Image: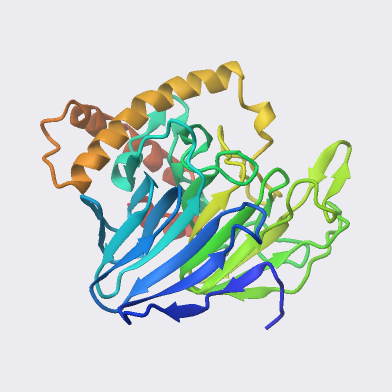
Length: 360
């Protein structure tokens, strides 16, 4: 298999107790984000401790408890201070450790079922279903859940990239998902991979008409691929005042790739992914402070209050139906389902068959 430093394979180290093992993926002193990222998997019931200023905690599979909150693979935490993660046999989690933003709430819980009801008049805000992928946008720029080395908020998404069969072909005639994250880095922590998943990275100099690429590298559930060309690095090209970096293609024949991805700095605003193009999240300075974004932030404040209240109550096993937020959630959930149904209706039969299972 080709070697590329941007592709990291998990190396598991058993805990002294023998009840769990850890794989250290990113190191704050080595990688450009300045964050530690660890996967932990349990063979016995035990508690794994993570020390540090602040953490993002998500499960890849199984169940666990953190403080008084029950977690499954659709529950995500932002937490300030040390973490004790109580897992069961078969539980696997991923933990990101970094700096806490000033004034950050000690604990924020986000459950994906409530994120599905985060909408504004233009469409979904946190649970984004497209013909190419499903993106659960757990933490965004305005959430300021965790800070990178540069002091910028990072984002935390759980993303599933679908079978690329039938998408527009690349220069070699292969159907791919094309991306070029010119304005941020992105490590992608793959954990649930079916089909034949692959990634390849563009070679400098970039050329929209005849881009050259390195070799395809296979992906599996033990792989992280890191779009690690940091802003201002010696390998970054600039053209017409624009940075050109982190261009890559992903392919998957006959399956799907589910991963956690972390963007530094965090994106926000509207998704800009279009089949067949080198799609990206644009620069923050074109979004932050605009009239449209300020209006979006007001809507986020409303829906996030609903999501966070219901998520925390659900994680604590408290009744939901008596909460004021529950009525809002029920109405918005129905509106979101109608939006997703309309999107699916606009796809051809082949693409609809690939996307529809993820809509549910």
